[in-house]
Length: 129
Image 1: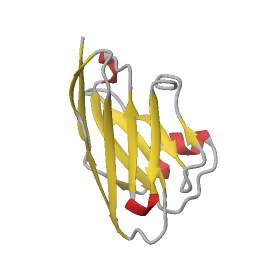
Image 2: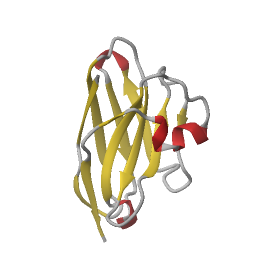
Image 3: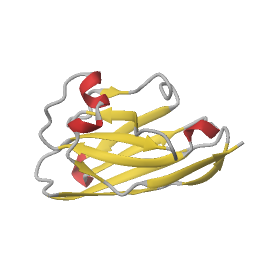
């Protein structure tokens, strides 16, 4: 089992920044690929970012590319999501998730929430206009 705990959400004005963290514990004897997703009320869960186990490769949809950056510190079992130039449409509950089998190797695999096997409880991000 892997436990994931997100933090860093909050209320911010449009144009502002937030940094989300996701701390992993439990069966963390090796680094896992990690992803961030978000879900707004009445909408489907949406892919936001992913990073492979080494941190060498990262993936983003066009909606956040150039504004969001995913990074990781493996010795701390922590993944970060730096979010800049936030927009009201970024308002959502943000989840981190892990692909504990490290089987993804391309964007469309990381994009699919079904490829992840452990999820955190989420942290709320609200961007006011």
